[in-house]
Amino acid sequence: MRTLCSATLISECLIVGLVGLVAYRMTDVPAGTLWAVCGVVMALCVLLCGFVTRPGGVAMGWALQVGLVLSGFLVPMMFFLGACFAGLWWASVHFGRRVDELKAAHAAQA
Image (cartoon, rainbow, N blue to C red; front, top):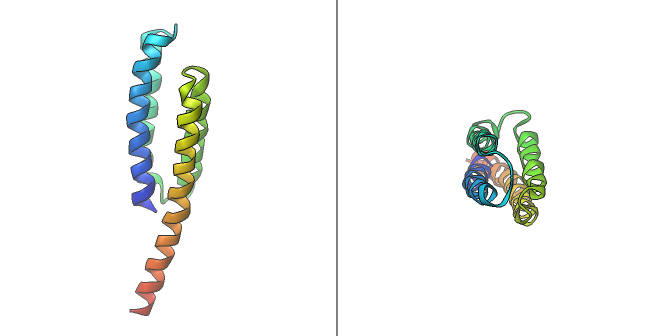
């Protein structure tokens, strides 16, 4: 699960940086505020890669997904991208857990 979820989170980190560039041109939000928020969210994406297998890690990932969808109020395209990444997050968690279960079953047989 860690590999799939981490790949999704790193991709989101890159998207947040690119959305920051778009929001810089499209909105009236002060540049310092915009880049502070983008920087914090990007750092959270990277840090969450290490916490994804710990208790509450997946829930923090879902909170991040909600935040990305809500960023659509600032950059409308983020409604679509946020929904896409929420779907990727679900798939990463769902199929990652299945892979972990299959690995554990295979290790138990060996």
